[in-house]
Length: 103
Image (cartoon, rainbow, N blue to C red; front, side, top):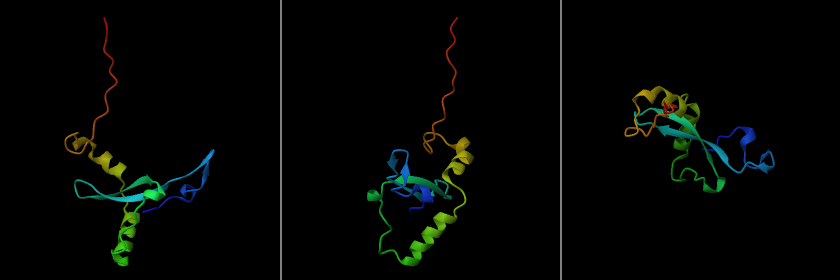
């Protein structure tokens, strides 16, 4: 759902241009079942609202859950880094900066 800070609304001037995206809060369910929040930038014309067939009460419940989720995707990833592998969750460890030695 769109949830930008006041200075991130589309049309707000930045440098020589205007912001053309919405900063949105996303509610994510991780592989282990934990729900966390994340932020994603979305162009307004590509944003799709919740379906109108979803009861208003359910829409409000989802909005409240997204806003009140305390842990975000960064914290979840940091806490699960040791158990993640490319095959399991797509985490690819950073390459070590060891240059080959020459003699």
